[in-house]
Image (cartoon, rainbow, N blue to C red; front, side, top):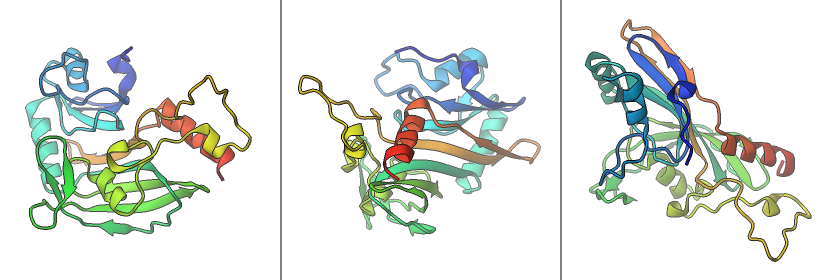
Length: 240
């Protein structure tokens, strides 16, 4: 896999923080077992030796990540996360037509430590997410997701509980999108196996808002990566 230049990922930088647009299929941190793969933390440390990633995104999820350049900056963001003062907005494409108008989902999440997450009202930890529909297509919906808490797989499992699984999210019964399913008359030869438009689940960390060391608001928006933008473009063309 060809990895991008770290400089090309930077959306914002000052003396304390860097915000990058993480590409899909690049881990946020070193994964357990130390696979040795390039990740955002390693790239950041090559650019700024004391860099620390302030939060993480699933490997397949793209979008905005805050990186602190020094320990004091890291502590400041950690406190903001702890006090739920950082605003995060994600975009997801889900299977089906939904009209979410500030839908609030507060189902507790249990993480068994083995990348397995379930809804558990007794043992689970508090998890809260707001959902708003942005664009409705004939078969799909583009949804804005605002997590208040930061549990593992929170957006993915909360959407699945609404029978609105993210497309391509096989873990939560999300199905991939094929061009043949939205474009009338589109056929593929019998010898070829049709590939999904996106080869991952359609989740992107679109925007993040936090306070800098000078207490001024930093508000950063991350553009869609190519695969997400292509799916939106095709849905706009063939599924409206």
